[in-house]
Length: 391
Image (tube, rainbow, N blue to C red; front, side, top):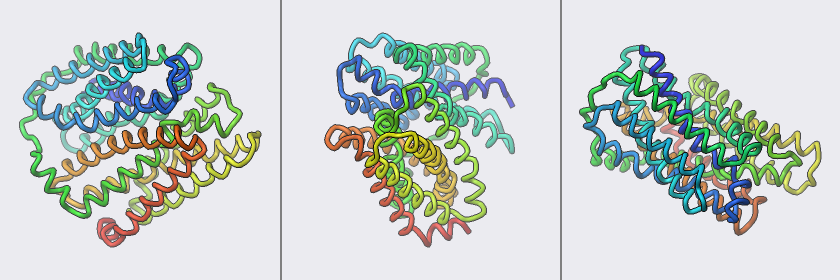
């Protein structure tokens, strides 16, 4: 297994994941300098996610016959350039353009990196190698978001984008050195196959769980800085530490979610996760009624840690269900799920921004809990199929 090359690919997904979540930790400072509302800045997340979701299959079709090394290098060069332009952005409109370019690069790089590993590594090591590449994205939640927020607080938000651009440049150099010659992928999933799967009720319900679950979670994550500032007396540096703790909880939740799914079953895990998330976000809403205090600070930290844990705990269960629906077309179903995930993130930026600008930050948790209740209804309506999938 080409271990060092795979580590470089993982470093690339870490850079992209950091870039994706970076805006959430920089909302107040970017909004203040650009003289726009935090709701407007939150739409940077929407632009990134929507561009990724819509461009990923199109870019895959356009580049399918190109050598993998050329595609990876081109994507990372564009990614680095986009973040360098963000560093020099003179206006909010300029930032929106850089988010669009960065999302195009991300939509091209990440699927290509996964496909490249699948081509290079065979047998029992393949899943391990692919999980290593994906670990870059998960690590971005733990390190990227809080580190970017911390750097932005100390040195200004532009420095965060500048360091991501530098990281992208480093990845580009090592890709040029370590990436072997890999022939183009010959086979592509047709659009007809994708639409046929979308006609299945089980697939639609599973994608609905993904979509509304992502909107519910990212409503809070996108606007996490103003949300936590409303609840606590913490300064920006302390909030970055809170985000770091929640990121660690997310990784833990993802790891134990697989074990719980194997032991308890898909349906039980998903019901437990979304029942808990409803109570968790309603608790945030309830704390809005109390004045800021040390006691409230402690409760918010505990609730936010548990929120991070639960938010990722259901992911292995949902992926298992998606694969069980159509085992012969697992890649197709999971690719559809990936598209829906980013559409959900885009929807979260829009819905959260609307709530923030019209009702106020106090209502973000209430909106999130309503959407989580909708997800729970979808899970309960899929009960029999989830039990069959678990068996």
